[in-house]
Length: 251
Length: 237
Image (cartoon, rainbow over the protein chains, first blue to last red):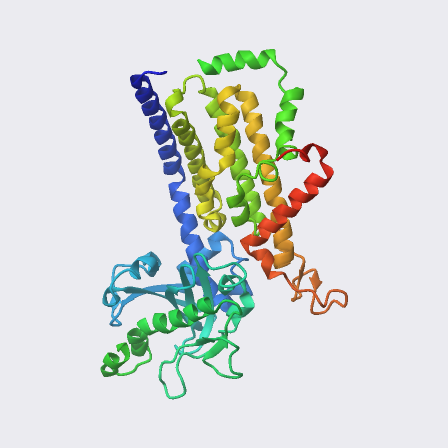
């Protein structure tokens, strides 16, 4: 049997050594880890405009430096509030959607990335909602008419592989969204419906659901409807419509 | 103190004799941690839907078992018996955190993909099992080999399961890594294009393989095959 004093001293020395070691390693790797995370997040945003990347590249083809360069040269970042006002002193890339979602709706900040390449401008909005098991999120690129979807990129925390996780893994499912419209012919906001049993042919507001993943598909519908609606006050302003209509739209 | 004695002891024994070789190769087959001891199943089910994360996980666990065995063995004479499990956990947790920080530093996407399972290496029964069963009572070099062998035995099964699941579930191998191979699928990117091929026109991916339950079946089949040719295992269990 060892004495209590020996045990305490042994544990203290061991844990102190471990603490110093881990702090040291963390300090050394911290900077690069933060850059890695930044590049990872920026890739997810560029995935929404994959159709319009320089030299016809895909996000996968871009190396890390190219991702950062594109962001510096071709992306304008804005943060807007729920009333459509631009906020100063904050970058869109610093807005954490997961944290914003925990705030009351009226206080949320919304990141907006404006991407220009080859004379074409895309407005990338970020949306977040619930899937079957946990949160799902995505970046939606709207063309300069702020109506037509130019591309989408979804991700998820814990959807079932092969079913709900297809929103991320199945590229051809995501491509269905390209060219869909968020306004109907009368200018009412309708968003895009992920329809179980298959989208109606030629309907510009519907895409096929993922078979076997009804809850995730409905989650995407809900997330898109709500998420894009949050941007409505600002989008209305950009489209040059009267400020008086804003009140109606937020409701 | 312990370190100096360890060096003296190893000079008397062969560095890589029969016993050492057995320590390394035993866990690969006759005493495999997954198929014979049935340990570490949780992560084997969770991360094996693709080969690349399986390989990363295999390397991570091998490093953790090898070095935690080494360090625990180095301080084994000093560890107070009453708190030995806590000490083992501190050693394991420290190494797992090192692995986690290194992954974040070197390959962020795979760190994101493996998410909690890297942290859960701490609770992997194989690691602590080897410390309790072997490293606490053996010299550092042998403990290191024992840890390495068990990590490799775990990793080998993980990669086997990963290959089967990804090939039949997704039609690719090593997806997400720089050496991605697209083998069979419905577009022109794949080596065998099921839309055009006459022989494989009927083929579709098996969605069951993507689910964790498939890993259970695959591990079960591996155990079956192993037992049918390895006569040493027949009377065990």
